[in-house]
Length: 268
Image (tube, rainbow, N blue to C red):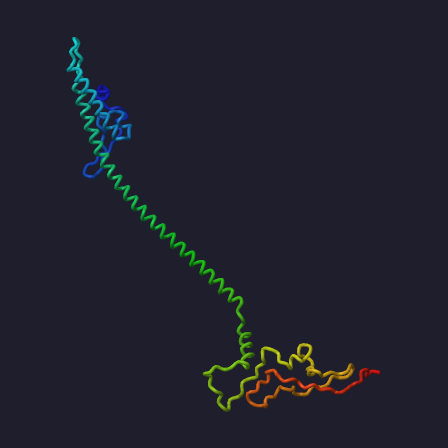
């Protein structure tokens, strides 16, 4: 092993190693005495143990050669082998120091990356939360737009609404703070109720014929119907007095009129 390490650098030993001087990285050629297999292993333990094992072997060979009592003495290892393994060990220690500096830098960068990853996760969570809130706002806005469109589609036209208001205005009370009409002003226009009164309901064929008679008023077949009185009983006219509603139904029993016509067969 000593002769192989002292023979010089091989092709694999010519790879570039990084050294650090004043916190600036430079490229240097690896030492010539570094073992060939040390550059192929990634573990710093192997790099450090290899020259130590070689130095141990040389020390054991030197001890055996010094303690030999045989007639043919064993030659000790050459001094160049010790010098070469010492240089190799120094280079391994220097490389270990560089490795430790690089490792500390890697750990520092690793911590920075972990910190940036934590911040990135917080940003992603806030973005996800904002996305959910925006989706809720969009859904609420779409719901409101749909409600507005449905309200517009089912809106009552203003002319129809005003006509209905005019039709029921005669049957609703005025607000308490409405001032009284000053004398000399024309009376309000006549409004028709939104429902048919009794007189209209007594007319046949959609309020186009003459009004029907009162309850109990009959006539014979072939004779003209009995003419109803011009004014219905129980329905006062406009001048009947204040406070009387002409459209209020009469609760009194109507009087029945009989013409005492006992002829059951008028055509005979």
